[in-house]
Amino acid sequence: DAGVTQSPTHLIKTRGQQVTLRCSPISGHKSVSWYQQVLGQGPQFIFQYYEKEERGRGNFPDRFSARQFPNYSSELNVNALLLGDSALYLCASSFSDEKLFFGSGTQLSVL
Amino acid sequence: TQLLEQSPQFLSIQEGENLTVYCNSSSVFSSLQWYRQEPGEGPVLLVTVVTGGEVKKLKRLTFQFGDARKDSSLHITAAQPGDTGLYLCAGEFWNQGGKLIFGQGTELSVKP
Image (cartoon, rainbow over all chains, first blue to last red; front, top):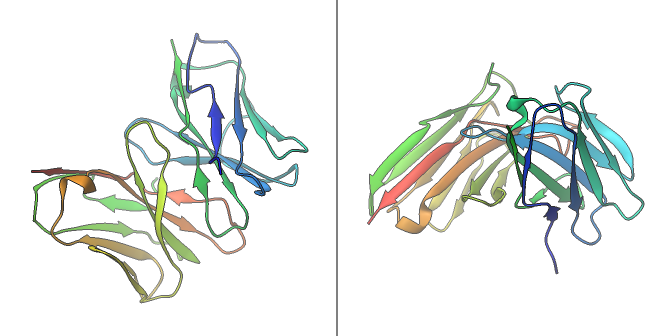
């Protein structure tokens, strides 16, 4: 079975642009969470979606938004990119709340 | 302010040595998880501890959850180069499954 897949793997943008990151959960998993990992830090929670509903939101500005589709895949959108948005963006899926399976992430560089 | 403090942040040891990584907080968690992350990959779950005072073993790795559910430790016996990686602790509050609070991580390097 395929694990959590994220696309693209790498992305370079300039300040002020907008970006969309995509995540496909493990088959059968209905929950998707997004995390931001800045170099040298642990991941920081951005959003969680369950059955297409937002279940939780971390301390991130409104420039960050997300949605979950009927097939449980998810997109993370970031508007008006700042240099500080450069990070590894991780998607995790779960069947229950007990165990998260992480994808390999999208490395976003903002120049 | 970091809710979960991990120490040390960096650790470089020789093969065969023992080591302990600590994860401390002033908050009480319903469970605490340990992950290992390699470059270019997402974190992979090693263990979840849910009961205060719980000890779990995974081959040469021993995990302990503090009695008050505020802290945890990871002990590696006879470290090997394959243990090299970033070790992350992550706490979870009650009724907030899927929302993990991660520590800063411990970068472990085991030299042959």
